Image (cartoon, rainbow, N blue to C red; front, side, top):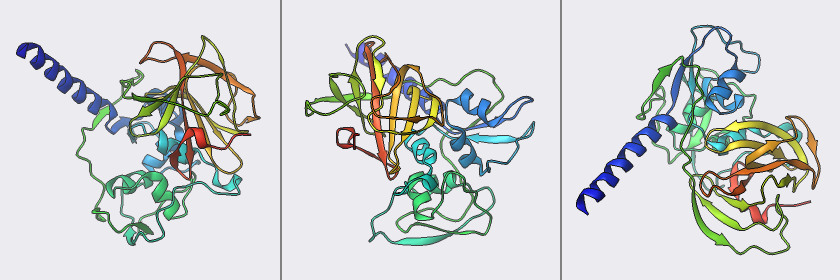
Length: 306
């Protein structure tokens, strides 16, 4: 019995270590033929995240031999960066409490929005909102920015205690599914979901959301009209689709089996977005559904519908 427990403990330690390596920031050396898009697909993150992690503008061109930081996947950060604030009447971006004290931060060489937020204990969405930054912003050395005063960060260049590796591998990064399920939610039977009559289960982890059961290849439909901001495989979530409503709320449909729309499309209520995939935890058809408002996850059951 003790030996069995010991083996389980060793397995957990090994799994945790491997997961930490896969989730840690990675430095990638650009090869001939690489583009920001191809690199983002390789690591299953968004181009906007890759730009933010390296302080690159939309017009910057990468060069062979250049080293890029590959940020750990964070779907909430991806949602914040996907938000087009200029297209909304209620701009996105998380806000801190009005009573939360702030202090000045001076940008130093090597800083990015991503690294400043991370080392000062803020979410990227909070940092962007506090400073009026959006997904096209580039910061400059000497620039004065605001951070939460409770932060213990300094103006020194960003550092990390997590493992970091440099790679030129052309293989696609894969990450263990770190989601866990909570309790089954008793939702109002009149609540509209992307699939019909699902069993609704809470999803635990860094990001709140719900797992919705579905039928095999069941159509997944839009529950709030808006613009498709992102389509692609996102690390740990499978095929993902972001739809931004006119008020800036991001509706996130993940674990799709197929997608029938593309980035830039304007989708309307009840329009088919794709089909349900197979949930890797239960091995049954379903999707994970999340909603982000002002850069923060909200209860999907309470998100506005059309």
